[in-house]
Image (cartoon, rainbow, N blue to C red; front, top):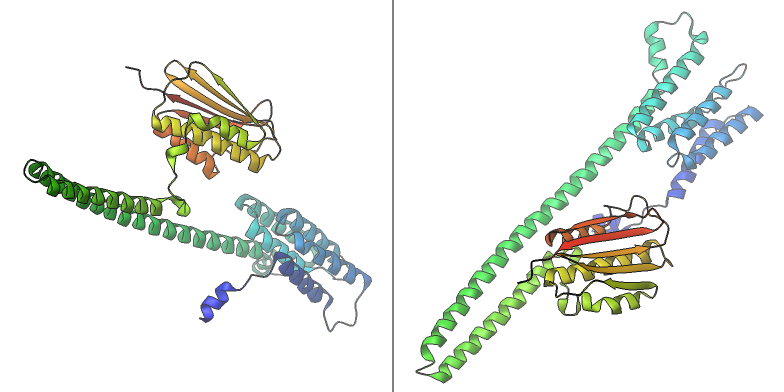
Length: 365
């Protein structure tokens, strides 16, 4: 119960941690029992503490600024260098910056520290000088190790979750196979009994057919339930009765800020293609409302020899990095791929975002 209660507790906001770190740096630099504070000490301590809230967002620039404050405070005759602010900033570089940036900043810190301390370490053994010279690299390495451990833990948790999902899907697939096999065999048995008893006992044959109908209805209900479980994130099984190209005018009208253009001679589309076109337009219009609110959309459906094309574009601002990331675009690509077509999505040279799909049609017989 205690563990569950702790899991339910809210984590403190980020600003609270930043404020605590800044206060810690300020207290460490001023010294709660230090009676010999100077103006230089106070200014450097306040400057170092004020950098702390930005260390996660801009780790490398903050480390450079903290290093500059350290060098300014290390000049004689006084020694008021903000050591704690510099160490925390270097740790933030290893924790939040990329690997190359962390290596570059760590090497620069070691080089600057060694050069600034060279004159004051005359007569000291090379081993001691090397130890002190490499000290700035320690917090960078510590931060990078913590980052790697966090990424490894997150990856393990993700792999464990994916493994659990795969195991559950395999279990449901086996269960679905058993359900189908059982009910189909029962239906086949009842149909055989009905066929043989129709000439001899029509009433019994009728009851047998009714039983077979109930069995088929039960099988469909169980399969729908299992397929509903298999849907990602608990997504319910869609009702496909009102989905298709015929519904595009109503869908475009419902969007409130879109136009529909149909080119070519309309032909009867296979069910999978009919549903795919509707879902592509629906998802594209949804993405426009979500990522470019207020933008106008244009939907173009073209019937060409041997294929059908659908294009949905808007005049909103381009959304860099959106292609291939969202689940909506992944779902579009999967639908088009199952129909044997191809999908392109991305920013338009004229501005806005465009989704274009080409789906081949079977030869008319």
